[in-house]
Length: 93
Image (cartoon, rainbow, N blue to C red; front, side, top):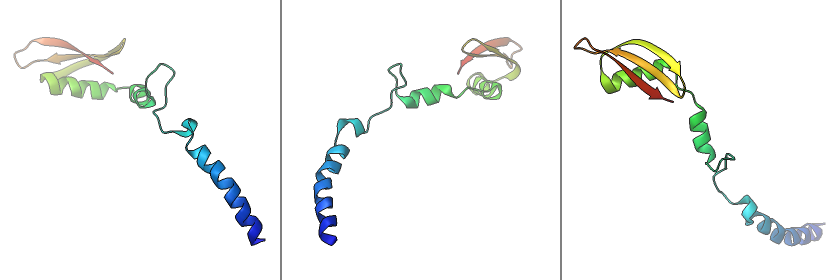
C-alpha cells in the first residue's frame, strides 16, 4: 500500500509543478476590462461623500463651508473666506 502511494506521488509531482509554474497561475494585476489594474477600479469605485469634499475644500482653501452640491464628476463647495468673499471650489471624486 505504501509503495502505491509513493509511486502515485512521484508520478503526480511533475504534474503539480508544471501547473504551479504555468503562466496562467502567475501573479499579475487583475485587469478591469479597460486596461487598468483592479486596484485602480476599487479606488475609483469608492465615492467621495459631501462631508469629505467639504473637508478637502476647507483644508486647501480655508474659510467656512457654506454649501456642498453634487455635480458631474464630484462636488462643488462654496466657501466664505475670511475677507468676506465667497468662492466655489470643485472637488472631484
